[in-house]
Image 1: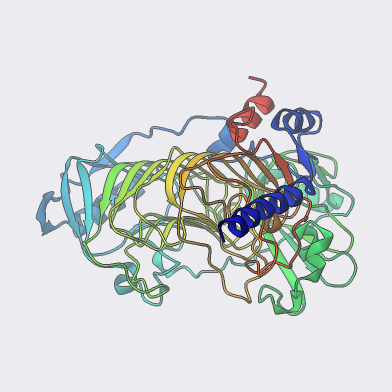
Image 2: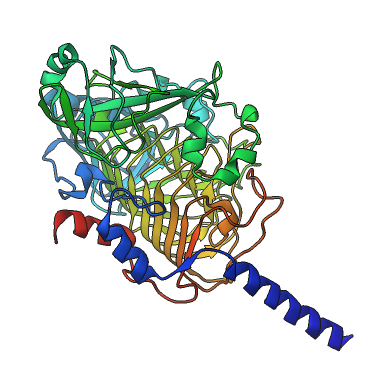
Length: 519
């Protein structure tokens, strides 16, 4: 019996080694050298150096204080309902045009959602001694909001707690002429349209791709590898009227004739088989709002059944650009932080503590080029750090966490998780009609697993044209059938490098940003 067990272990290890050897192998040093030669066209490593507030080029701002909740009647004694005083302080700040609401140390009882619905508004505490103690979940104070995956008790968005879950169609959009390729910066428009765009230089605008199954398939392009053709694309609910609609955002740098130079390189081609439109509404995203230096506390409750969470949710950024969260602790939450249809926002110094919860962080509904860094997830989330809804260009870095890398279906792509220590627990989510687990170029670089569990993190069959680099604390997880909403097959073009040792560079985002800025 012992001999059979030993032989089985040897055979299993040999089979695993052979399977791993059959995958594309390289080293982190070679990958990085190849990336530097063509930083916007690498087939497996996306360029995420533009992620975060102000494209990572400026520090998070320290805006001046224009209102103090104590001056408007807040007691901060943990007993008095201070909601009215907080709303009055936010209104005062809004009347000034831009500025911070100061929340001095104290525990503030709050019974309603706090809404930042104008550019330039900031909630600023004095560290963890400034405690916002919300008594009700979002589902009780915002009609029609499903707190399991939407909304938060601090709500940053142009339309406040009345906003819908899906992005609106951009108004008065301009068609882009075909020809520009992924990774390039210049697109062309008709001469008359170039004149319309002139006042919008420096503004953040939407770009929307619409493509069906005839000609070049937009969804399969995002999927990235021929093995993904076997997916049942007809089952994906994102197809509306036989077409997939994908919305991104960028900033116009300059206009020369009918050529428009963008701040960020194109994530997809401007292809004749797809209609690509540039929005012209500079107010589409709320901008330059922040939540910083405070603690959010919810009542001590048991975790609700999955998908029945009432919504004791931390900050919710909806249709936001160049906003930030800085040094915020969230206790006893359902979801600690939610980015929904956001672009170039930064969350730095987020800490989630307390009971078991649904999500650590969420990245939903076509959110792009956001940065979550310096985070600690000490609670035990069911899903961990989430991404979904064809979100792209996002970065999670420099974190310590419980949970897993929750690629929540709906085919997020071109994103990086790097320099993270994780106790891999829980699992991913996403319904069967929500599309593939992920799309192309998802990169895990420099991940330290504390509990020898590689599933969802070091599993190459899940990451088409991706890269798994410098994973320590677990071997590759080589299951290639019964995958999470992915077709079978181990080799989907995912590159493998430096398993069992630290990669060089240690932090892919940091290295890319320094490369782009010449530092």
